[in-house]
Length: 442
Ligand code: AMP
Image (tube, rainbow, N blue to C red):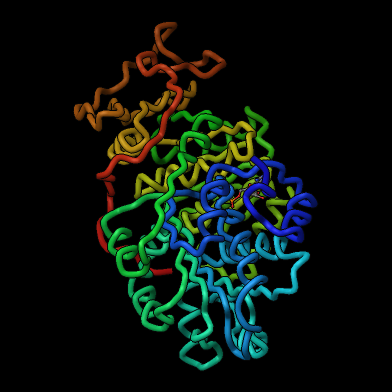
């Protein structure tokens, strides 16, 4: 199959040739003809599958072939994204695909001044990429009208709900013209997403690709048990031992990100951090510097877990396990992309055993544990497996006097009974979530 056989017009085919895309990915093969035929879409696909081109290419074609010229302060298509970073990235991709078309594109998001965005919208834009909060602000300030809207894309809809945007989405829904095409992309379909789809979509075509298998099969994953207080020390040790060059590190909290970055910088390691408290410009700069290898270690909260497309990223480290098991899949999906192999290492302490168990259950695999000599935890991480079983009674490790222990073996030691598994990741319906309260909106 080629992009031409999917019915794409010549200026798009030329752009794809320039970008070196030869064959449509599975999500593109399914989505492109459906969107061109005007169908609503409910697509289970996550970043890394080529989903952006899956919706953007036919959308660009429809906008080129049909409809009136965009009016002042209007948009003909709206792509809603959960985070600023993703909005920027989607916009960059759309602009690349549109390089030979007479269409205008623009991205708006919070955390930066609204005035330039209002100015830019004056002439109207064909495709507007937006985060929900800023879109509503612009609408309420009459900088944007949506009566010309032909197509709405909800990108990473599950993530938008996770980030607490359900109220904003309900508001946006009320702002939209009734007659429109709607495309919904989500990595998973919870009951909440199905309800949203029920409201927003009209007789949608469901498409599903299994990107998780693709991502997971190319990512070697394992766990290093460690005491919480020694995580930073272990990280530095592994980094030096493995001569890590470019690592994306996930920490649970903003303070956790700052503390690790401070510690690494204090040791003269080239590290930077991104999280929701930092101004957008600072976050983007850190990300750009990481992408261009000017920064070696980028420490992030889950704000960076989805959507970021970093070429050839070899390694993701979970300094802390994510509170929501699904985020594990998104985090490790930052590596092993586009056919490359990657590694994902999780530093896990006894407190995190329930999260580990939830991840193993969700991903249907028992993660291989590798003890790092000299870092065996005093607080043993109880055994877990893919059934969700946690062997509750933590045993103290035997004192390693003499040759019987696993110390100083000079290499990583696998913990025996959990053999490496070729993961086959499929979501299970009930996702265990360790959430102590509603997630705060960013
Ligand atoms: P996405 O899932 O949309 O974030 O895309 C993931 C990556 O795959 C991006 O770097 C795209 O540029 C790239 N990509 C998307 N479609 C194709 C294709 N058909 N052939 C080669 N690369 C692609």
